[in-house]
Image (cartoon, rainbow, N blue to C red; front, top):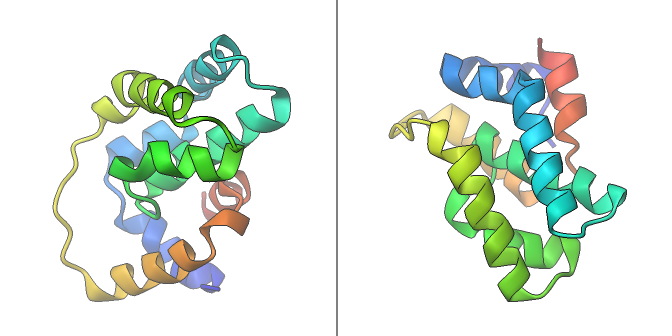
Length: 129
């Protein structure tokens, strides 16, 4: 698992747009509303928030969000696809997805990806600000 310094380096490498989205209460409310409209319970909504946070951090890929939701939430593919589409339209579409070529950051992301199902984005963000 990456150290706190490595996580700080990852967070610092994010553009301001991503940092703002991670800290935005409005984004969290949008995600929560999508979860509620999709009949997710509180625990599932928290997992959804975490998964979206992992995508914004660049730990998980935005193109695999639907598959990740199937795995993490245990929901059917059709429902996961609808939720992922709504999240993409309301949150992820606000991100400029720049190409990054930073080997050390990529190594940190790989380590986090390997452990992404146990990573708590809220804790990471709280420790990095």
